[in-house]
Amino acid sequence: MKALLALEDGKVFKCRSFTGAGETYGELVFNTSITGYQEIITDPSYKNQLVIMTYPLIGAYGVNNNDAESDKIYAAGLIVKEYQDNYSNCNATDSLKNYLRKNNILGIEDIDTRAVTLHIRKAGAMRAVASTLDTNPDSLIKKAKKIDKMAGTDLVKEVGTSDFYILKKNKKIFLNINEVKSFRKNQNNKPFVAAYDFGIKYNIIREIEKSGCNLIIVPASTDAAIIKKINPDGILLSNGPGDPAPVTYAVQTIKDLLDYRPIFGICLGHQLLALSLGAKTYKLKFGHRGANHPVKNLTTGKVEITSQNHGFAVAHNSFDSDIDITHINLNDNTVEGFKHKKISAMSVQYHPEASPGPNDSKYLFKQFVKMMDC
Image 1 (spheres, helix red, strand yellow):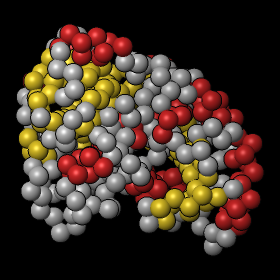
Image 2 (cartoon, one colour):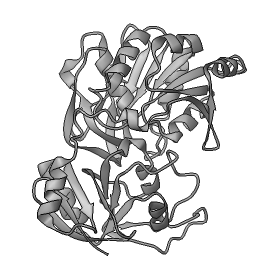
Image 3 (cartoon, rainbow, N blue to C red):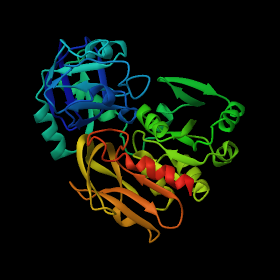
């Protein structure tokens, strides 16, 4: 089905839909991963984004019940060079096309993804509309210009949980505050973690549990007083979508929890922790999205191959003297990790629960556990 992709700067690309009729919009971004498309589109951090896969052939291994990072697709649309419907994978339960259709997500192919990616690298990530329903370029460009900008928008409220829960076999079991306290008392001396859900990926939960911890996932709006009633051994600040600056309620809560229990931030959680410590964040030109980003651990001198998905970063020169920068991105020298010198708080910008290295960054979960043992 013929379609158009129109960008806010007036650039228009001819394409077609492999999922049927529809129209979708959001910030246009690219991901350089060769595999992992199911994990990417179900990551809540991709809320309100049209994702271009730079690898040319997508869909060859279908989808399955284990690779989803949440309970639905959060990406606004998926754009590929060529879609492969004849999937082959012993674990596959369906095709990518059907998976997108069931979630009412538009899939676009037969487009020069290299040209689109190079344009974004030069001009920056921008708002865009993909449509089979409206094929008037001028109309689509006007629509693109009316989309809310990513900067200044709080998307955490649209992706996080509104209730406490634990995750069992990818199923959420919701609890009230009294049930949480009861759950807390029956942990067999395992470290107990309260994980803030700013858009948390399931694999973060799994890796925390593999590290010997139990955890409860709490809403992003949970204040410090409630956390202290739960009485965790540690606090995890999860990944999530969009700009950290408008998420002021979370920044204030983190300030209130500093030096209460050890804190570990990942991705958006890293940015929110930085803001709570007085640092500043800014929007990257086209972001870091892929599974091949080299990050140097300044403590060990080792380089990790990391998975990343963020459009904002922490300003390098905005930290005070109590902060040690622990990791940097070797592509552009942006801050990828830091720790506090005086209190138990650390964070990384990338995703240690992912496995591009494949296990280069798993030590961070062990460090978090060790922080809780001290």
